Image (cartoon, rainbow, N blue to C red; front, side, top):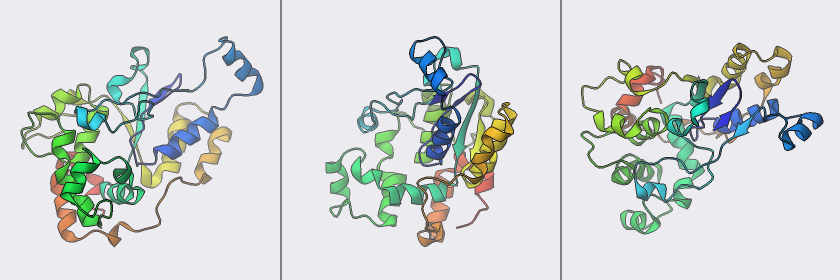
Length: 265
């Protein structure tokens, strides 16, 4: 997570958070004098990056996480910074899953472990998108979700709750078929400004303008190149059956972000 005197940014994986983090670091790069003052402890850094072991629901999932990760979650924000404005980035779930597949971190850090995934798929790590979809949406769920789940919940919804809920365990165990997370948002989550990957340059520029950053200093964001992008269309992989399946599995996520429901594959 990144912390300034005005806001906290949480880094949800594979949404464009690398672009956002890099942009903020460039914007807050100290000059020579300020850097010297920061080294001597005379002034606080304009931008702090907190690296930590992220919170996970299970021991098996935690074993795949890094000790010094940029992906800290909301309830790990230090107390003095909890009252600050909070923003993060959200992405079309279908495009995000394609990005996860092509990035292949699942091959390097398989959940729950390499031996188990190889039992499911002897050809691992040579998985088709359909193989990966089943792995992501079904097979790993018992290893990333806490005991006591009452209904089936997709991995993106699980990760969203883990990242942003006041009390992630209480929230995920409270889910029932009749739950409406949009209606009950304030019961579970803080106020968060969600920027969209699809319009990230403009939305990030506009947000920083609202925070009082001079227009001349943030103008570069509008033309800044995106990072870690894929050139493939999501329609390369998606069938109507897979689209229907992810809409069902991630129905609670789509309650919060219905704009992604009609952005067809």
